[in-house]
Length: 402
Image (cartoon, rainbow, N blue to C red; front, side, top):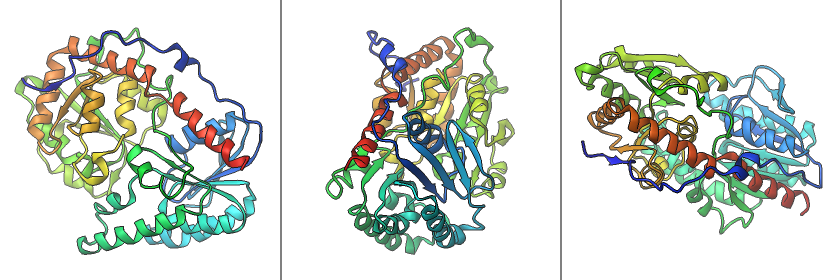
């Protein structure tokens, strides 16, 4: 078996005690902050779990405003729901206007929004004298290129139009947060206050219990996140049918929502579906439990422009949970997975190669466990939220004192 294998790694890696102890640094200016989204869920890991809670710990008065059905509070953050948007057109046209009116009513000093649909809302808030931060989670142009609900012939023109609007609006904003360096490069020449805040996991959240013997884990692999065709859904299912006969009891644990919902029925007709277990959308404790029971995590995203230079949270969550990763053979993924010795990289379009990688890890439990341990050490040393939190707080200090 000739994989781009992670057995080669730096044996001198040590756990960073400093990273384990970093706390949010208090700021000198307390300000009222509202985060806005029409797309993301109320318990979004990046928005609520990391950014909003970090700001609340640092002394900010934080509200998370979105298309949620209920109000709530969590971790010092108020969650304000405007009701679910009924359909995509409602979300894109009516929800932003509703969001704008409620945002004004909140009368915050800083507004931090997370969706390109809210670009014009951000401009209107800026014209009202508010500080506005745009959080670009994805490359919008590349993302539109694979939107299944848009006819192919309009995707290019729409992508160019939205990209031009995005750049025009970004010039006016108080700051820009991006999830990756390639996205940041699109904005640094337009807005000098652009920072990369990677979507790395919290150190303690997904740590695998140290007393769990590897041999007690299920003969299973997991995928956690949005289940979509361009995220390798079909290839993962087909791979299960290509496992050798000795792997009859192996299962694929899918946790997340199907996008679109009809995809589940399509996947159910593929060979290999009988080995799939669907968990639906899980809470964070349930995600931690699932990852603590399996022997590998899959992140076999398709080679689309939006994914080639991405840094998906699931990659780092698998590493944080102490399980080996089977990832797409993209340069950025290879640098982490092979460079850190924490898994295998494969052609994401080839179910046979995915199946071979799964079989290899299951057939070599000692090596798989060591890969998982190396991934966990890499998260403790570098790929954790504590380091990214400080960048976010520094941006906010700059904004409130400007």
